[in-house]
Image 1: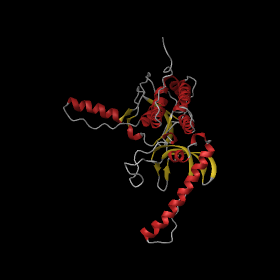
Image 2 (image 1 turned 90 degrees about the horizontal axis):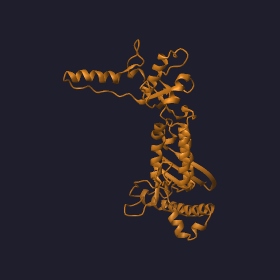
Image 3 (image 1 turned 120 degrees about the vertical axis):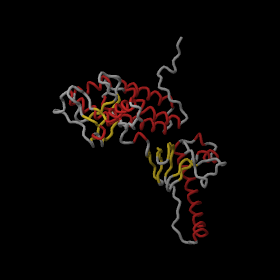
Image 4 (image 1 turned 60 degrees about the horizontal axis):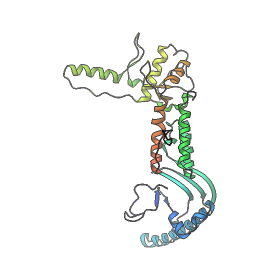
Length: 329
């Protein structure tokens, strides 16, 4: 169980040992293992169910002690002898991962006295709408395995196998696209492609060109407004559709559309990223993506960075070199 970096002084003074793992609006989460080990020297010999029961017994005792204190607090602090203050044990958590406020995962084995086997996940990055589901499902899987005590070596092996699957030539490229909504397109286009041109001129490109002229005249450069990567990827998709004369048979991306986009490797069109519509992808676009989609960059930017943080929090080291443990002579 990873504790949050900062805990309010009224919960734990700086010089004291901090057993508070997480604080929510109306809940406190405490690591009870040190207390269980102190009370039960045979703790390591207990099975998981017995440990849960012992933990519940302690939680219920503290629940009653705190509720009794509320009566004293109500009378002495608020001058209200009759009150409705009550401390209640919410759940028994066998293991948990707290990334930050309102971003956590917990393996709940009892809730209000009822036996459960429930994985409760809130706010972690892989749950966001712009996280490709294929990466999200994998992250969810290894998170659950880590919470249930799977060894790092086994999770490392799963990660290497998953990376190999992502990099495989037959993996559907549409699975790797970043889902997003493009709310503005026209705001970033200076002019559409002219006769003989393939791509629209973006306002940022025109601004850079204007600044070259200003520099030649000794004038101060104007600010260049960047283009969000998904927006630029969508504009380039529309440009290709029109250049290849496919815009009559296939849907263009319009403002407000939900799209996916993916980084490209060096390609003849010098496009850095390309967006696409899942429901209507021309074969020519699919062929282009199959050949030039940068799967490695997608893996690194979408999943690997999140895994680095996860491994660091667990005190593990992330290494995706499949030859790390081999010996060479």
